[in-house]
Length: 404
Image (cartoon, rainbow, N blue to C red):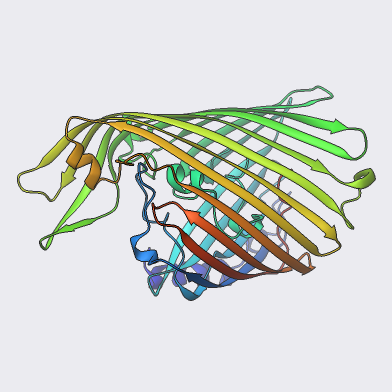
């Protein structure tokens, strides 16, 4: 979406009266939506060139690289949300990012949600972050670290989202049990091409959890996602002035498990608290790779297996101050009929297993402001990259509470 068109949409959203203002006799309509703005600024320093970033063995989307070096914009957002009537809720989130010096606008989410179906059911339709895993549904400004885990970067391009529908059911039991089903268009990474007449992806997930005494709580989840992919693109490659774009067509499936455990003395997290979070995903893909733009056309069969995990802990040792440690690890085993084509597509790891250690310290003046410093020892590439990330996150206006 161009900057001009996006600004026009913003003016419309902020300037026109709400439905209830236009028709105050409509029952169940709220007077105004909730409006919030997330301001995210960063200062990033790397010991290696961020333009040459790669995850050997993993095809990367355009959004999966490193943030710009030096002063940069992070995940700035404009969020509008509110009740539509007594049965429906709506949410729009517009992201504003900086990439290679240009400011880009992105419609991150735009969905309606039926919240009163009864018997534990809720439904969502539109564009939304998938319910797979634990971190995926959480917006970047609410993450405990500045950047995404490597497995999210490699498999999802930081976030897995799509246009489609989602149905959830919460069991009527003392222990929390939730089942979820999604069907998506399949036009965004890691899918592509909107196969099957725009019904290209499907996902299933189950989550369960509960409390242990007054001080402990936990949740564990299982997820599975599958897609029919048509023409998914990766990074461009310049060969003698000709741009070649690796594309994948075939089947893609991944499964994952996620876990989180939280501790707060007697359930009071204001002074001190601690949480451990971990996720593991494994993906299998079969199909064909084409280097679009090559002459003659270069092709290869492709049988790929990629996986990885991260483990992180965050400790609030006194009010407003937290420290966190995270470890990432990836591996891949990809085969095909033409290794040179796979290599150009970034699918040859040459035995390298990307890993990273991250240490962060942050200070929250209030629930609306946070300052963070983070150091990464990033071995995504064979030569290590020392990364220093400084960040502020500010929230203007009200915004919805985040998940467990």
